[in-house]
Figure 1: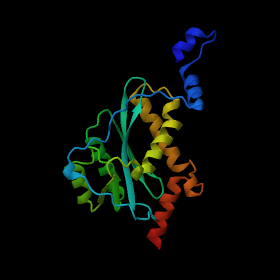
Figure 2: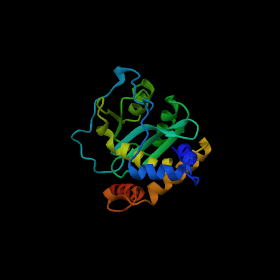
Figure 3: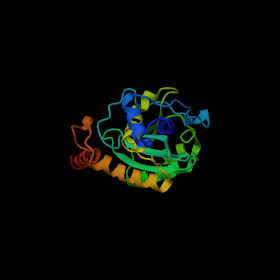
Figure 4: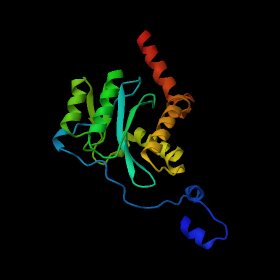
Length: 219
């Protein structure tokens, strides 16, 4: 679209401006996205445990998911761990492949700091495999998985990905993995510690995560 307009208009326009105008008009490209939710083994699929559970404290439930982040050439995969109560980003990791290793590394790192009661994911291959299940069970964490095709089961994590992409990813022309890492590092800090969240009464996720945890420890 940018190339076509530059060819037919008298003044030059850049890609960022065209993207902003198309976004404001609700015009989006339609293309097949990578399928990140293919099962590895059906025998490792776990039931959804959160149907009747009220999430009322930090580290009660963590949601995990993977999305792809587009760059100028290609894309990378982003894995995040989100505390469902506070919307706090517990940890995250980038990878150039969908190998389960980056998921396991991130989860091990997070579990060294805190241990949730339940971790919920979709039925993707990075989660329906013996290494992932074993890691959580060895740490006394219950494993929950969305029903097949039930993306609303993990809606909080999906909303976070949408916020991230509209706030940062789609407004920059990211050229290299290094640039992407810098943008994500900055955004995670702002999101956790500075960005007010409507569902939390206008405070950032870190405030709710830390204050609720401290209250629980002293109660």
